[in-house]
Figure 1 (cartoon, chains in turn purple, cyan):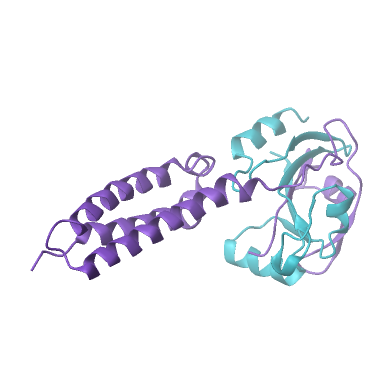
Figure 2 (cartoon, one colour):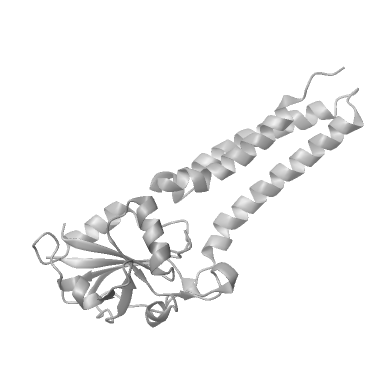
Length: 148
Length: 95
């Protein structure tokens, strides 16, 4: 009886956790978000484990089941890595160019929208309503994707 | 600092209220459910929302008290957003 091939399972778990930790944790800090180096380090570690685990699975005397399992876990891990790379480097860059967006030096078009208490609010009000008794220097409009 | 942050998305006032409560953000959230203002600002990301709904692409604008745009951040990757220090630096140029 060969010993349990823990490396191949660890490789899969490190891949899974290493990639999931991006949206769940590392995305909160600009230094680990703008380029996901922390996740790449975890993935590199997972790949080392994958190589060791695969070699172990294909040593003489291992059962067919052990080999099949190692191949399945390797395929799943590589698929997850591929999905992550695609999401970060391709999908996340599929954004409209927004060439007609207001440019520096242009006047921002006024608008009226509802706030969270269903009250109509205009940009000009936002620009003039005092903050703690003093007139605001400006407004930072943050457009975001929504559905949180 | 005298800068008023305002978040805008297609989320309904109720969805934004829930997000505000969960996150603890105290600044203003505005709802543009039909992406009218988002369209006027040319920020529509067509079909990118739930069920193929039009949503906003991420974008940040700093507008001075006279209504003029003084700084724009148009990210090329929606995981990557403006850093707080970029906004603080831009805000310093406003009187």
